Image 1 (cartoon, rainbow, N blue to C red):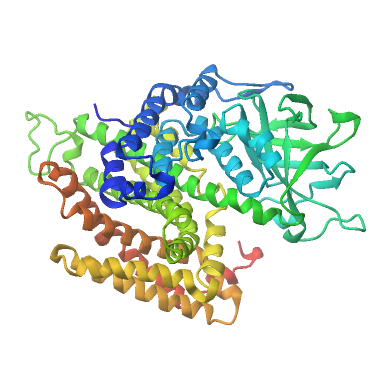
Image 2: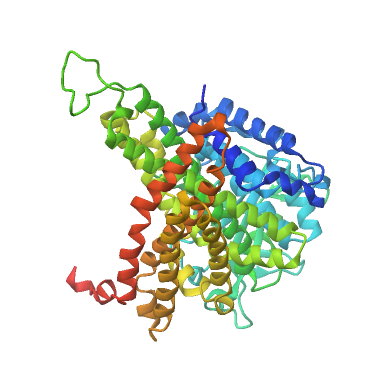
Length: 604
């Protein structure tokens, strides 16, 4: 029976027919791998996700973690699933063999992890954050920090978090006030509060490794204003002795759990650092260890933040995807109504998939989720190229493309795969918003993703204000060059040449409007409608991604024609229904509209 978690056939198409995962085995890092080892990893993830993550997804939503003032309590199935995840070696799937890892390409690792995001996004958040934490420390930490904190995380014994936001600061990290005082032994003592910390407290692992942004005071004892004063620290729940054994409890205390509309299986915490409940080594303050250099904390944390942004996009895709498959299954099995030209009540009812409007909704979902999955896996392939491509020019190009596509990979799925989740409810009709069916939970879970790891608006400001003009527009030019190559290939395929022409028009207008916005002479006007720019840019990118898929599908093998015809029809849908939206947004942007900018508080 076809899985309702993800489509293995689509993953195979993206990995092997489009992104050529097998070609990565020609590179030294992946030389011991083959399609067989990649498929074995995917098989393992599909099985563990299906058998241990999906079955308690609804239960963990209905019985979310509780804090009794001393301990966090949650359903037992969460730990059982995570223990199996760790036992399978999946926490270290992308790491070096000598670190106990599988040394999988990022492309395969992300495709494999998508199974867990789709099966149970709440439980999968714990390894998601732990892997990102470990990757950050592998880039920025000392050998001793890696030995004491990263190796246990990769073994699944410790879990990790990222602690950025604070109650009074929100996304404005320049306003954080958590304080880190240097100690004579080289450690630091932290005091302050961190809000919205996913996985911040639990008993699922032996220890929790918090990566904490804090400010080291200047010579005058005051905190340095702005982001330049921020440093990054390891603050473990339990101190770790030199031999790797656990020491005393650190002064990191759960003040309370936040109760979100989705991701309910993930503890989301307000943490107090250095409040005095515990006095490690007989002194006040939470013990922390500096990661990298003082005042370089935000730059170091961006390793984890960028990884998390692409991961949030992948999670949004996964939730939209499983909702689509649930809706598709429902539509194929639910009889209701008849065609407009056949109202005879004596005739049997149609399955609702035969109704044109239901087809429209399913086709929209297919375009959003298969397009979003392709985008996220393309970005994962860029990570592999940036790290392992044989030529420096290839690595540089991959880095530029990854820079400019990261805001899109985070934000586009968070918007449009959320819309897919909404359409999945609509396909179910009245059943869709009842708790007896799964799709209402998928929507609630997915609604968090436009906020997670930088809101939709922040991604727009990052894209228009920084990414498109960085290095004199090098990243934008690199992306335009890649899209141009695709358009050139499409020109030679009669069935797709028109799509290529439509994409060229959108790309040309996007470039022209980008230049006009930055010539405005007023950054308030330039960035006033950055969200509309983000959406127009994202839809242009996804039109390119769909044309890439169509170019692969147009030559698909005869025995699987239904699959390839579906790809081509979804591409046609995107070009007929979605790409035209870009031009309306570009019209608005080109006019330098200030309607929202000029609105005053008192006028609301």
